[in-house]
Image (cartoon, rainbow, N blue to C red; front, side, top):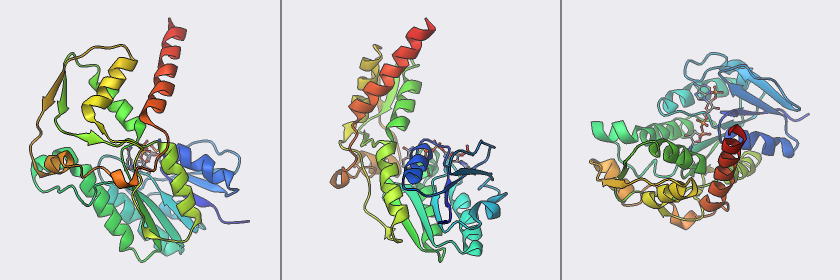
Length: 271
Ligand SMILES: NC(=O)c1ccc[n+]([C@@H]2O[C@H](COP(=O)([O-])OP(=O)(O)OC[C@H]3O[C@@H](n4cnc5c(N)ncnc54)[C@H](OP(=O)(O)O)[C@@H]3O)[C@@H](O)[C@H]2O)c1
């Protein structure tokens, strides 16, 4: 039987799309999580923490391919370091990593940059840990997922008046489209840094927010705020976009219609 594919972050937004797609190819899958979860058909669950390294040797044991999706706002460099140490000891053959478009183009130099865009710096640092690990690797940079844009819009919509970074644009991509590409990459040979993956269209931040407000029948004044710092300037110049790689298929409008439809269904079933 083929060795299992280890998926770190297999319980997250992206991971939940990657795991079934890997299973559909007939591969056994091992999911790493900090929390115990039940195993499923062909899916093994292991508990470990990439921030401390606890449980990671057992997680990588016997896995030739590792798809590293675990991430959080901070500390992805340390998580990558703990993972590559264990993977090097276990003799893993291919490490696939997901990063973010703009990791190499958004300068994080000042305290203000770090406070608002430190995530991009840690993703770049984690990319470097993986590229310098001595393991064979593949890294895919993706734009922001629809789910993230929706979550931010939901939080902002709670405010009576919404401050929004002036001049920011996004190219939201569906986590399912990113998952499909990652599975293809995981089953292929190590390819280094592959072309970015962006969603089908670029939108102004205000356009995305207004579409959410409209879909949920809300009215809020939007107040454009010019963010200071070099990182914010780079984002205004489009460093977080990949217009030449608009290959994601599912649109923001399709995602929003599905999600807002299910939100209003659950509201009416609560009524
Ligand atoms: N969201 C976006 O718009 C976007 C865009 C481009 C790239 N990415 C990248 O895509 C990846 C997945 O993002 P996502 O939105 O799916 O994330 P998510 O929904 O927040 O899920 C995060 C995952 O990471 C795991 N995790 C976090 N800290 C961990 C730790 N210390 N040890 C082990 N596992 C840990 C969590 O597992 P447990 O909680 O079960 O332990 C969970 O499965 C991340 O690397 C992110 O940087 C995201």
